[in-house]
Image: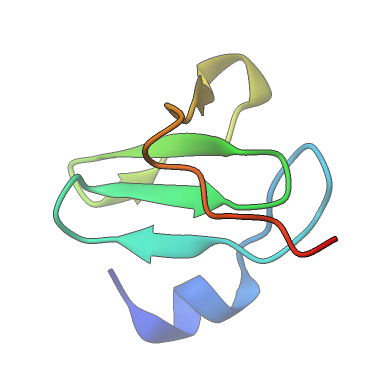
Length: 63
């Protein structure tokens, strides 16, 4: 994933920053707790393509 592209892409739901998950080829929005796939090097940033993170994948929230 191109580092410059990662700096400018945003979650289509909340417009927040996305985290790159290289192992599973996806971008993660920790705020909305969803992941967006990367197909053939192209991020698929469509809200209807978002996959909810499992409980194990979710990061603990600071209250």
